[in-house]
Length: 410
Image (cartoon, rainbow, N blue to C red; front, side, top):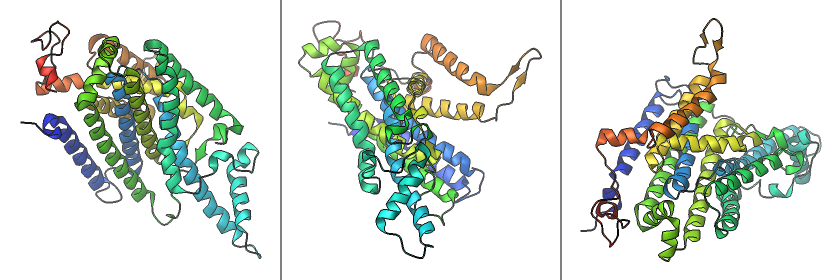
């Protein structure tokens, strides 16, 4: 009897139940709808954390399941933020300019309003004209399309060039990092069309909702982030649960053998790389309105390295491990860098956690890699008694490398 997708993957229902319970608790405890023991600023932190968990799931798909250590996925995350940020900044500036010009004796023309918007947005970089990339900034629908289209197109072009050349391993990681660095350096320039180092700001102010307090706006984004994580998790679990997922694991474990069996290894890699870039773009589009600002520093290569560290600490090859790693590191980082952790005075030296946090994170990554390669997700396997199939059990083929019986059932 063929079991359903959810019956084969009960962990999905557990994850969704935990996420739903968490969302309800935060909603009840928020200042907007409940008791008020969860502050608005912390609601924003939790919403941003859920977005980071979503991009961690995307990273786990390419690295944990396909073996592609991409050090450029945070670039796709940032591009998604830029795409929605363009609309938010354009519409918000339009409201301000229209209100100021409405007091003039002669009503302004539409072109005068557009010129005023351009001056307000790009005056900081010595310009007043809209670059070509802002052509659809006045359309929310088109900018939402670009949220997935721009990261997806960049990933498609880069992946096609890299995978068709059969670049793998550390060389591919270096190439993805070089792509991220090049994009970051380009965006730092004033003539990039995205305000250079100034970035896009004021993204937390939703157009037309001046009478709505940030308490409610933060909850809307929190709900949106939770829904996106739920859908993204289910989609990722669906991808890795069937034959497609088996091929991905085969590519990760022995790429040459999968190619010899007749599978288009490059096609599988390119599809997964592109899809996960789109997921990262969606996560970024939800993250930066909650952060309020985005600049090229957000796309720096170090951000993508942090992303890999989150997945490693949580346990790569486990979707829930990626979520655990991202949530844990994000919240602990907020604790240490937000001034909540007290400094320690040793007499001869004062430990300030703001400076030491990155060292602790790097040390955690090294320790996990050496002593707990299954990450924090491995602890849940021990608690629940879940055991992964051994590669040397009852063979289903003529040689020792054949797929094992337990693994074939997954």
